[in-house]
Amino acid sequence: MKLCKWHTLVFRCPSCGHDAEYAAEIIEGPRKGSMWDPAYWCEKCETTLRARDKWLFGAAFGPLMALVGTFAMQAVPPGLHLAQWLAFAFAALCCGVVGWPLSRLLSRHLLYWEPLDPAGLRRAESRRLREDDD
Ligand SMILES: [Zn+2]
Image (cartoon, rainbow, N blue to C red; front, top):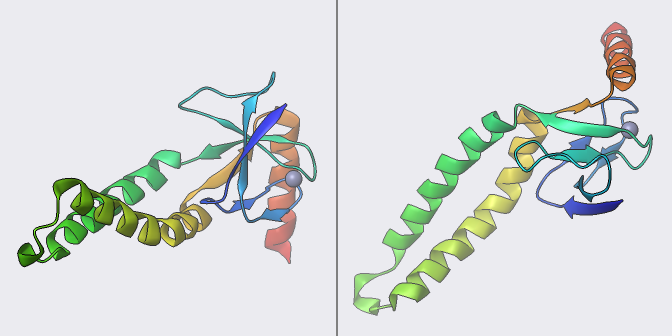
């Protein structure tokens, strides 16, 4: 199995409570998800997970990035006569600088990780109930 570590996402395993500074997407192997619904892996309890409400994340992240890009393009002083590609590079840089922490923040609050197999789902459910009791 091959994993790709997305450091732009923060991860919290619903089954074991494991926190990671990245989300490990399965890009090769029998449990790999589809392009639109990729599977992720918890390295601690070895559970396959998927990200629920990812569209919500995209719906918030996409427009915000477009906004940052637009602002960055307009922030280039007209007197500077920057080449078009340089202005685009500047906008991309701004998106990267803003997008990195923004993506982590959004993934922390908007993404919900959920085990793929029913047994894991039940385990995560009972864990959540236990946590509510505390
Ligand atoms: Zn786990």
